[in-house]
Amino acid sequence: MNTTQKTILIVEDEPSIAETEKAFLEGCGDYFVLVAYCCEDTFHLVKSNSIDLILMDIDLKDNLDGTELAELILKEHNLPILFLSSHSNSVIKDKAKKVSGYGFIPKSVDQQTLDTSIELALNLFAEKKDVRNFPVD
Image (cartoon, rainbow, N blue to C red; front, side, top):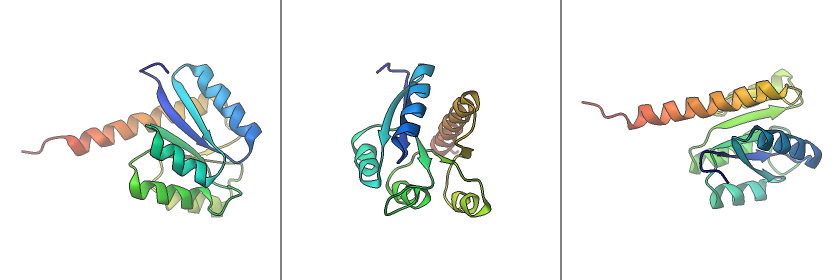
């Protein structure tokens, strides 16, 4: 892994979608990508790796959906999470809004927009951390 690369965890229960996203992101050259196909794998990877950002599918075929999984992760880890979904109905959007995420991206988005959304989320997260660490007189 290149030291300037950011580590992204893709949480996606559809292997073909996960592998497509992984190949694209690794092709950008800026990212080292890990994939979790279930909640258990996600918890393990978050605890055992230095993750810079999570791309979280909302509609997981597991005991938790992506928003519930994100809430549990955020209780223990300060990470930016971008939600992905092939559904864009109001129920899905409302679920995503309740979690401290860094955006909602439809799975049908083009690669340029996905890459830009990731960059913006990483930048926003870095700025947010800088503000918290800024000394106050």
